[in-house]
Structure formats: C-alpha cells, structure tokens
Length: 253
Ligand code: AMP
Picture 1 (tube, rainbow, N blue to C red):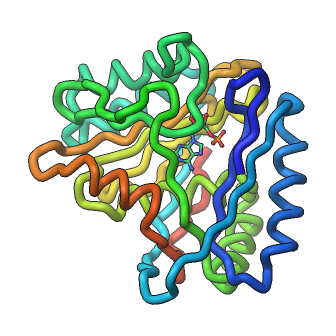
Picture 2 (cartoon, rainbow, N blue to C red):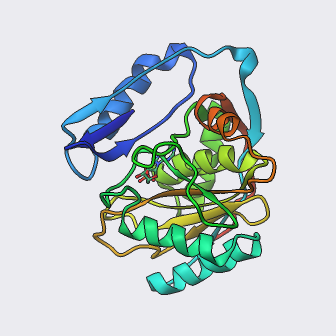
Picture 3 (cartoon, rainbow, N blue to C red):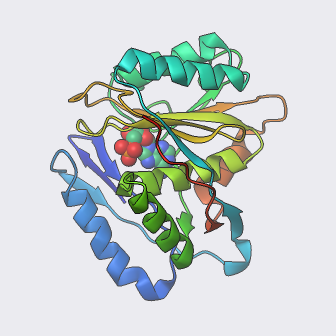
C-alpha cells in the first residue's frame, strides 16, 4: 500500500501473506492509509501472487536501543555506528543531509529508499524521486506474535518497529548492503535506526525534530561486487519471510 497527498508520499506498508488472510489485510492497509499523518488524496493497494518455492526464510536482526536527548547526540551515535561499519564520513554526511532536507530534488519525501555508495556517498538508485521500495517481506504468524509480545514486555512496541525491523532485516541480509539509516517522515515519530550485520538494528531516539515532515531511508552499499539491477530486484521482488526473531535488548537509559 502507498498513500500520497498532492503526489507526496505520506504512508506505505508491505505484507507477504497467505491468500486466506487477504481480505483482513487489505482492510488493515486501508485503515493504515487513512491513519496517515496527513489525509491522503490517493491510495494505491496492489496484491500479487508469489510462488511458495521462491520464498527465502531469515532471522530478524537483533534489536538494541540507544537513548539520546538531542538530535545532535543521536546523529553522533549514528555516525559512530556507520563509521565502525566502514562507511566514509562523506557518505554519512550526505545521507544525513538528504534525510534532513528531503531526498528528492524538490526537497520532498520519496516513497522508497536511496541507495548510497558507502565510500563516495554518491546516490545510485535509478529514480531519485521514487527511490527503491522494499516489498514482499513479512513475518510468519508465530514470529510476528513472539516479536510483538517481546517488544511489549520491554515497553518498545510500535507498529512502525515491526515494519521497520522487517525491512531492515531483509535489506541487511543481502551481502552488498553495508548498513541502513532511517527515520520516519511522520512528524510525531522521532525514533529512527541504524542497522548493519555487526550492530544489528539499533533504535535511536530523538533522531529528528518533533514536528518535522522529513524522513527517509538510505541503504549504504559496497559497490565492489554490486550488480545494481539484481540488488534492486532482490529488494523489490524477492519474497522473504522472517521465521526466527533475533535477540531484543532492554532499552538502556
Ligand atoms: P516510514 O518509516 O514508513 O515513516 O518511512 C520513512 C521513509 O522510508 C519513507 O518516506 C520512504 O522514503 C521510506 N520507505 C518507507 N517504506 C519503505 C520501503 N518499504 N522500502 C523502501 N523505503 C521505504
């Protein structure tokens, strides 16, 4: 599902489900579109079949939380984690600047993600207004319930965490991805994250200013063995199911 207002993206969601749940999930998608921070004037919902044999099963990334009281502090932690993963400072600064200002040439949000060369900081996605949208990703029912219960126990449950952890786990599973940086475009959700194989999924509070309508995703890639077409095909088309949940740590104050 993707919803927009005056052509600007306001909300989206992706699921990979058994056909028996289709009606229920479509209703849920409409509910989510209508609950966007801005009432959309266009909603697109599409459903297509995938072959069960083509599905890859993966484990979700471990989840940690780093609490900050200011945006500068959250950005400092993001830079520290991204730097430790070998991403150059020029690439990190470029991604932070684009997420702060709006990643399209018009300074608006995209409905997909940027792909950024982890060394040069150059953008690589074919359409810099649309970005690349990760799709065909979900949890098994058991994994979804387990994750929801665990996040609830730790007081960090949010629908957005469930969605974002699924996206990040799929993106990081692919070898060419070095790390991901994300924060929401929703004005009242200020927790973002950095994800990588080494660090897991690290939630970062106060990563953007309350009230800001700007957000997005940056996938940092190692271009050495990258075939951009097959990388994008994996993100958009390869069906991936999370059937095991990684460790989830208690947020530290
Ligand atoms: P959200 O976390 O849903 O607020 O999304 C924040 C931003 O991430 C959006 O503005 C999009 O640019 C991007 N985004 C959202 N969903 C996806 C997705 N499935 N694949 C790639 N990028 C996405």
